Image 1 (cartoon, rainbow, N blue to C red):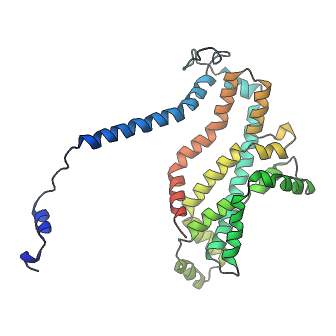
Image 2: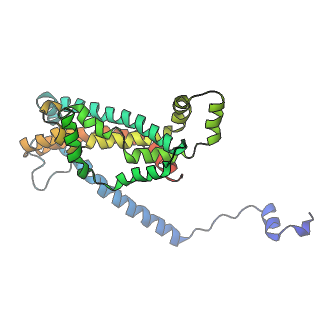
Image 3: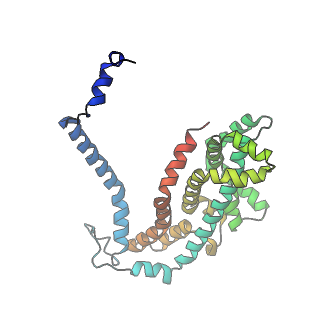
Length: 297
């Protein structure tokens, strides 16, 4: 190709250094304004949480004064000591950790199995059955509470951790999320494993699960947060106060100590802290799993 055949724009850019972009005052001011608005919105969202932590460190009666102080003076840990030393909040904390952990592990197992089957297995009416399963997303959980409670009563599982865990061991959303992600795994990879003699469970355990790590972390965070914060179902199933989870115990505590604002704020911090730390530590995988799992299929 001759020099004359080369477009003029190509010749111009080939021998010249790119010119720096000119500073546009209009774009700069819009960027500053956007950051100010976003910072204000973030501040409004964080302000109640920050005051909750601050109030939990205040002496008794300080948070109810008018106007309420923004910072504790002096800082005291007496409210947290009261929770764990006299009100036995640690017992309810262990119950919540046990229930949320069991629900998370079982949900990862069964939802990943169902999602893999709906994505890669060929069986009659597979897609119709999956669409029928998706109808469960449109049914409010409160509608299913009475039938579930009657079923658990017949199985003698009321007032047991098993009664809290069993209805959440597999969910429509979890199956949908895993299925969408597994659709992106090449069929040739699974066929090659079958040719090498691997069974379906070996393929699921050794190939599909490791490849699904981002979406499984996403599902684990979502399920754990939902199970940890669940109030209604444990309240319906559990009747023994020794088996109460943290949200149920916190509700009872608020009725008994309705005037102790600082104590209630300390209990709220204890309830919020585990899920907040979990989300912050895994938010990168959470967002990646949601993004990658939501665009396939």
